[in-house]
Length: 471
Ligand code: MLT
Ligand code: ZN
Image (cartoon, rainbow, N blue to C red):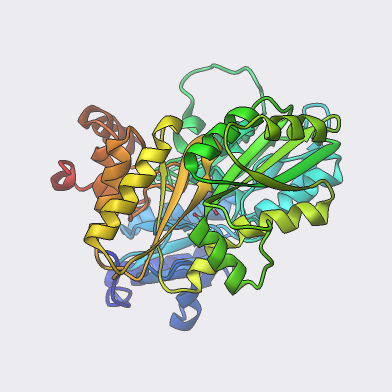
């Protein structure tokens, strides 16, 4: 079920006990239960997922988080952890009177450790604030996406977020060298030393990263920064199709410092230019546009030009090396999520594919959607360099699960994953078995029941109901 009617259960006895308990144990102002104030926590950014919360707890340190988690465990009211509420799979939207544990107030940012190039931050610090702190120390947090001003580090670690720079710098997991987590019994596991070599026992943080708030509440992370690159160039290419994009990618891999290769299809370019009043980036239209970026120690413009000229098929390119010019080129790609939201409730997917399968997946998905949903509008963009395609479908009933199954099945049939970077959440749990074996899902269940036996954290997310495993 995708949409949930507004509150019925928030007056249950257990919820009342929880609220009374939290009123006693948290500082005043750290608990919201006025329905009007809850509303923004109860619906996701796309409008596709909504539910009801018993209340919202807004702790400002790990001890208060632990208090809130322990109170939930005691009263039997489940909780859902929320950061910037920018998720796209309904994972942090409360269901049926859960407590929302908002970690937005854990937004502290520590000083940069200049010996190790590492930085401690609270879970509620936004990506943008941390990027700025790193830049102020002459360093860089090389992970990025368009929701940077609202998305929090805690949420990004919890979902193992990816973004445009994963091609070279990996996903969030690769940035995390320390983690503090509150477990279901309220205990705190703190591994914040930032040791690059530390194999003492099981790697608990590694299991928590990417678990989407189902195993614990991440309260702080220690992040590995990188030296900033003195030279950056962004280039927007036009190529005929996705096969042309893969030829381009092969050539761009020869350019030192390649760190991003995103793309958008022609309907995306038309829509974003129209709705955001942007000028066409190239003199004539192309089937596919690729936005590539290199960050290097020296000027690589000539290398880029040489590789662009070596392409087997036709292409065109415009490039910029100054910050404003580079931002302008990224805008065509980065404004898409917001632009599509302006068109209605989009059905959003983030499938991951082997690179060689991208063109055939693209052809198959277009044909299958056109035949089953002739009125649907389809927009495909994403991160071609790492095989992560964002399939966006508009003008279909958001309650209709048929589109989800069609897209996710198509990805699995092409050797891919149903979730590259957005997570499983509520949206895709029914389909997990399309890309994970029964043994794999059993192992996940064992981890969940070992760390959260009472199901306090985000029940019904990530793992399918046992009777749904066969899909
Ligand atoms: C992006 O790459 O823009 C994000 O993953 C969000 C989206 O899918 O629109
Ligand atoms: Zn993305």
